[in-house]
Image (tube, rainbow, N blue to C red; front, top):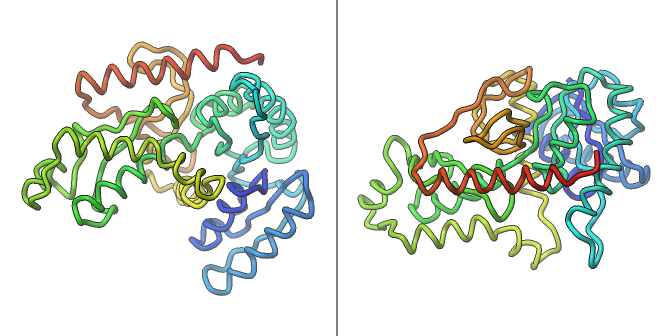
Length: 310
């Protein structure tokens, strides 16, 4: 199956690379306004496929998206010095108008996976500008934050992150909400395993890990300018769940009618993903503090989306 990637910058190219290595789809097409950039990335990634999976990686124009089952949107503009977040959003909305119009023309049946930041609000923009249902426009949301949470918890407990079952909900940003009350390691609560491992999870340890999850991007950006490998793998994971109709549970962002009383908001929850996009939501049991934090996060996203000129 064909997958399109619109925007061949660091996130788009890392997503294509991760998909190629993981064998996601049979053909990946990179599209960018800079034809030389998309061609160079396609050539470079294709040279890795003999060591991984037999995926064809090419570059082209929007017309080459014809027949794509999924299109990843990683296109956007960078924030300028002194520019407000809303002004940046308005400029990215203009980019999305052009991009989504072209996708709708050549790949009208494709599901959309949005990776452009701020991803929650841009997921709302993509849905507003497309003919897709809410379930077919999926933002990467907190899939990366959840991976960071599991990695840090696994490291603290001395177990593999794959055995940690914990989620970050809400915004992909400063108001994100790590859900500790239902976090599990294997079949037991993480706090119980921590006691068994003689590594208790007290208030200080919980706050330290939560802060590291939230601030991971700042640390990475300070060191190398941007983040792309982690989110690239997250994009590949979402696309694989769609193409293989996995019915996997991933923390992604879609337009939701109601999140704890906040109406019409793009926010991340654990969601079941298959061939038709999001099948259902899985709202975990939340503590009172987590509930309040998720309402606050959803409200912040809703308020920002309301300020857009669409």
